[in-house]
Length: 176
Image (tube, rainbow, N blue to C red; front, side, top):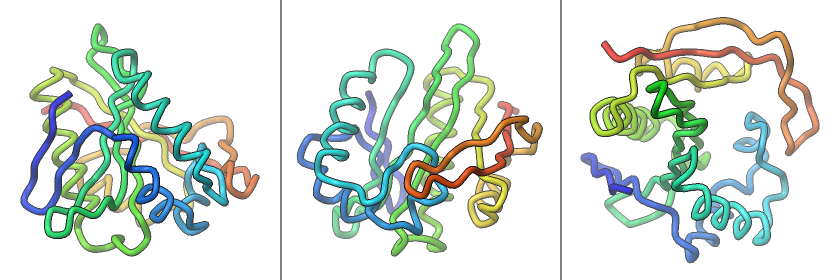
């Protein structure tokens, strides 16, 4: 897997020694409440499981990156291509940022980088993502990246951190 460099960020493969920084960023109810698969509290065991999962699934249907801020080498989030279907030229995008790094343009910068990687290096043609209806800030970010509403899902996703059920929308970006 390639490391991706931007002006302020490095997107790289997750490492086993990232656990402490991952916990520092994601063990926050404001982060985890709008994600379906992240528990709260987020423990060392959760981080170790996720890292192992990332390393094992890398060659299958997922590509995981952690987002590192170049200025201080601090891990500030993660971004993934999931349900990767190279034969159908599509994948699902997922991402998260630690709350201290919201509204600073890091999500947009990482998003642009992963989209370019997906379309130019993996030759994908379609990216989709699921977003909780009430997550307006994330919706604004992905729409700025070019994603468009495809449809509202008929079912609901449950946030593992709170047990709350959420309606969600499916958005799509096609290579232009």
